[in-house]
Length: 261
Image (cartoon, rainbow, N blue to C red):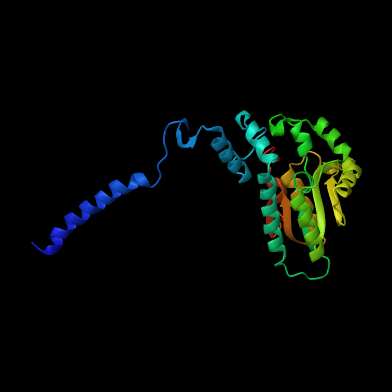
């Protein structure tokens, strides 16, 4: 018998042996204390809520209305911690790093778009009193909060805003707030030390009822039609960033408290 005929069964045996012994070590997760049907999702609240937040921030979760009841403490701890501020700082750093690579034409048409709520201004004082997203959204009570014009700046976003101004970007503020809130919104922005924007764009009568992703896409299209080059866009909602007439680069800030389609 040829030597190759002896080697073939030995090779097959060794291959099976390696496969049998190695495969369990690829990923091993205890089936104890797991979500039914998903052995890799533990029911420990912190782990569950961390994975839930990941799903939300990546937009894998799609539409959702309130945070899971079991995640109330988790979201509160996150939003009131240095982790939230540091995550926001990371987004600002990445944004600025990209902005510095843009070759500015010097014609005032190189632009950047900012959302306002949970992007420039933080409504954390309001959500602290309303369950950090565990309660259904109440437009009336939120409007009363907006009327106070006391929302603080998100520190990382304020720094980014100032840096972009210094680099020569034309800054547009595109918000889902209504036109009737223009005065209090401008007052709040100035209170939080935001100045020098080119245009504050709010929902007019013809924009009412449109999904945010449609409304904001249309407004970006109008800016492009005016000759503006939208290099960057910053927002806490995917509907701030996706759609059509999108920026060259979009930067998503963290927000596990609510979702806007």
